[in-house]
Image 1 (cartoon, rainbow, N blue to C red):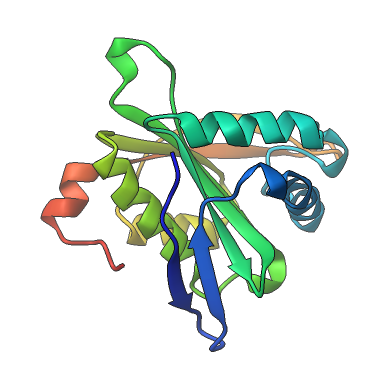
Image 2 (image 1 turned 60 degrees about the vertical axis):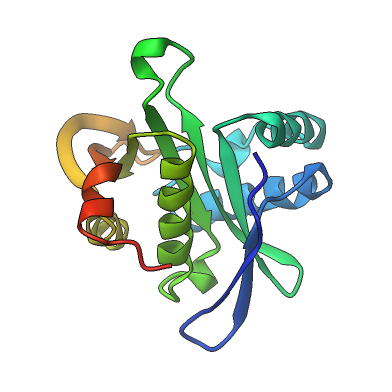
Length: 193
């Protein structure tokens, strides 16, 4: 599904364009995912595990573009991709069609500028329009900034998966499972955009 563009101004005064990426952006999105995986341990994969090549990602982007419910929002600064976020169905089965899974990545130098909050609010609105009833995510236990943002946007902690992530240094991190029931945030008017 394609997302119409939305212009936002972030805390430092820069103007960001939020919209769907297309297949021509595949190489830049692969690069974004590689960099964000290098910048923090909060991403599920290490940089060397960013396994989609340009052609595979082009096909994925085309598939998302043609999907009725799944979508991706990309953040552009002066034409350069600095972040992306997306929603995908949990699976294709009827019993789970009301559920979506959320993921996001933003270049470290643009974190804490309001981009993540703007993207998340736009994602939640579009998820509701697309007929999803709840959005789910998993977050590293020590990613306090992300947890705070998710809670501010209506997510609730629903469980912990112990030792979900094993880092290269041999240490473990728990995964906090969170869910946002979309009718609750609509009722509470938590959408900011």
